[in-house]
Image (cartoon, rainbow, N blue to C red; front, side, top):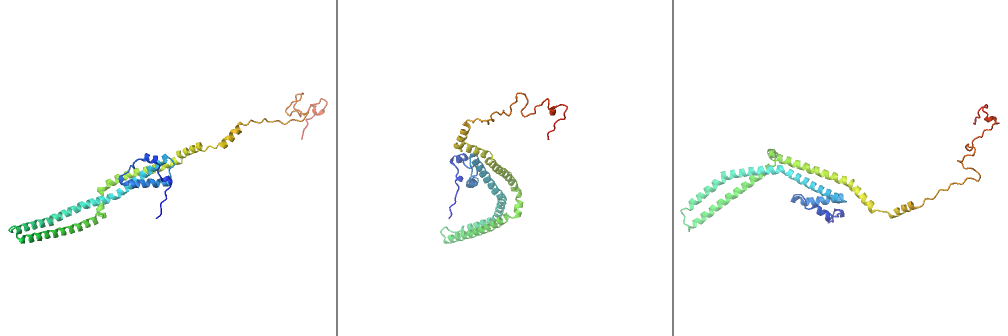
Length: 280
């Protein structure tokens, strides 16, 4: 026989089990609750206290959902059987009163009349008594057989559609009340699933990331970054100009920028009457 393998995450931690306390379900559903809790934990693998509490909520709501559904399925049968039992009791009472009560009364009177004139030591007395007891026993056995036949017939017809329709008014109100309770448990189950998902990929993920940032410190990277930040900045050395050449941004003594043409009074190129020089 194969041995079932259970993931370590399905073992409920002791501190978490203390938070759960006793299962808040009907005593008959405790085993189902524990099995659901273990199954959900194996599938979802809770990572923190919040997720464990959500898993417990899922097991609680699902246990009550299944419990209510089983109860609701029994309403028609319960009320049909209840009506059938009432009908059977009425039939048996009428049959007993109409058939066997007169027989027993008559037999008792006949027996008393027969032994009235007999002596207590008369051997005939014992014989008559045995015959009377056998007659009553046979009639009682006949009565039991008829009761069994009537019971089987009533039970066979109790769950017929006719009886279910006839008893509908007696269980429909209870069924509707159970449906309302079932809707609340189903809503709670869906909300717990949504809350679990939002926590795992929302707040829970952020908390785990923050925890990992605190734990996973990389000293090598931090030390190299600190050393780089502490290193002195090397001064930039400007390239030297050739000897005798003025700096590019210097201005000659005449006040004109370097590289500009100097006007000569005798040069026709700079005569105001001469046409402007066009450089192509």
